[in-house]
Length: 399
Ligand code: NIG
Ligand code: FE
Image (cartoon, rainbow, N blue to C red):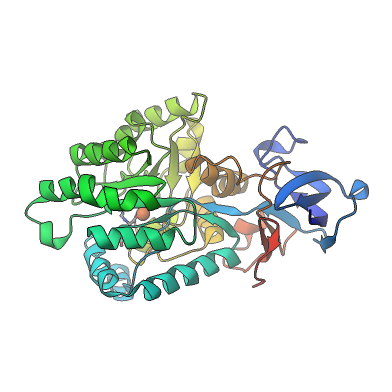
């Protein structure tokens, strides 16, 4: 059994409120953390720290659970920088560019797609992300969706089948046939590599009846439900997610009071049935759109997660610290709420109890900041504050 002591921690975010106080982040000060076989084995005052095979001196800095990025589209080819520039010059975002990326992705080799996922996964890791969900959705043929998920599964346990991202051009005049294909041969080919199923439920993508049918087919073969909902305008997506017991409804930019109430009602329940509202402020930033009203959701008692939505169209960032800074500055989340949402919130959105918190038995996924407190993540935007990342207790790259 190998052991590692992270010693001399000035501020530890545990996300375990019972474990020593410190509000929802469960902050503890002047502690050490012992890792055994990739798991947290002990947390206690520095002076009581046990001996270990190896030691990392945190030097009084803050230590946090690794970020859990619960929404990312990393399997694609090409980029859409020109589309971004046009938006910044006044063009609206409609999602129409998805088909451009579908064309490039279909034309790419497996190794090209794998290299892109590896590059973005590395970027994210250097910025503190230790768990990332990865969606398909830029293949949109049976073979291209299956290979997207097969490649995604090389990098994460949390793979999501998004064959219903948009109706591809070759099915443009027969969307019912495409939905039938998604529910039939495409799902059959994708399911062995997927944990989740997702649908882009939005005007111009899939309507609520198509979305319900596709998600029900996924549930029937054992996939968990999540969906893109209420991004570009109000609609039935959030209510559908609650109806189906989705782990998360993502974007939530345009919500009615009834949507907020429906989400809040799930948070009051017990037993892992919460539907999390996952907010993706990188998308509003990159499409110059109004941000979702995080304050309204939090004040209603909804469980909120933050994620990057990393994709070449609407949000080409892999940076959770950037999303935290946006959430605090633009969405009126407190720094503590934003840090919780980027760690424990993401874990809740993926229904994972082993990550997003630092307590005995949790995975030793953590980051040491070049800063004394979690507050600095929003207070010092754009600054590379992640000094070191451990995943399963193993030191990853230093920036
Ligand atoms: O989550 N909204 C749908 N899908 C992505 C955007 C994909 C794209 O523009 O390529 C999103 O924002
Ligand atoms: Fe997305």
